[in-house]
Image (cartoon, rainbow, N blue to C red; front, side, top):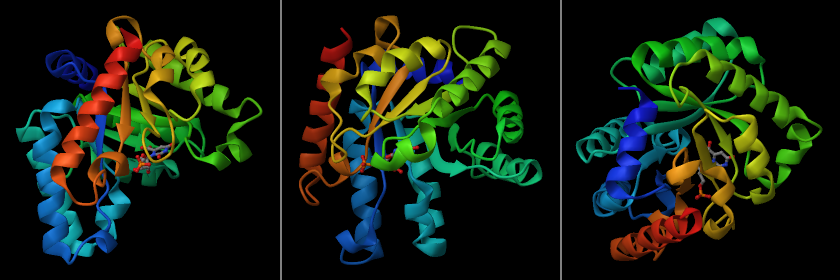
Length: 266
Ligand SMILES: O=C(O)c1cc(=O)[nH]c(=O)n1[C@@H]1O[C@H](COP(=O)(O)O)[C@@H](O)[C@H]1O
């Protein structure tokens, strides 16, 4: 099965378009053991409410070896719970190094089912990621339009559209309804979603920005294709730290986001 098939099946199975971001920050906890227990508790408690799980690698890397071991455990637990794993690494480099990144995060022991990829070094540097994703049945999400306020500095002036056209071109090389080359488009830019959906008809869209960054689920309908398919919307802090460290508050937040998203496309 391809990543797109697995994700689509999961979306339909649990009727959720929500991506659970797990970005544990050490300053929120007494110590590492506390961070680990809470992160795994949130994952297990929210699993039934979400389509997939996205750990941002920086938060685990910042914890050293313990963090990398935790990343492995978080990913293994997610898979046991039926959740596809999108590793948020925003990797990108010259071709030979991109090949190493692709091997590191899309194949082998530490692989995610998908990886976020930064296209800034040029389109030829996407090739190693696309090749490994195709071979392994995984996927990449290319940064097209990021959610942050400063994204306009480099992405305006037709640049985001240029990246989107390359994502679409790569998508055409894949058979089937969905490509293994998806795109990140910030949920904080609702007015641009329809154009990006149209430009990249076969791309799965990953939309971060729900919750703390201020995006609203009710404005995201244009990101979806029919049946509410083809897009997942991420919230990280807005779920994990919804009520301080109260796991039940995380569950309530995830349920509310899931329901708001379902109400928007249907
Ligand atoms: O690739 C991403 O996931 C990403 C892209 C983007 O444009 N904006 C963005 O916020 N993200 C990530 O999505 C998560 C958002 O976190 P919250 O703002 O806490 O929901 C973080 O892990 C970000 O690194």
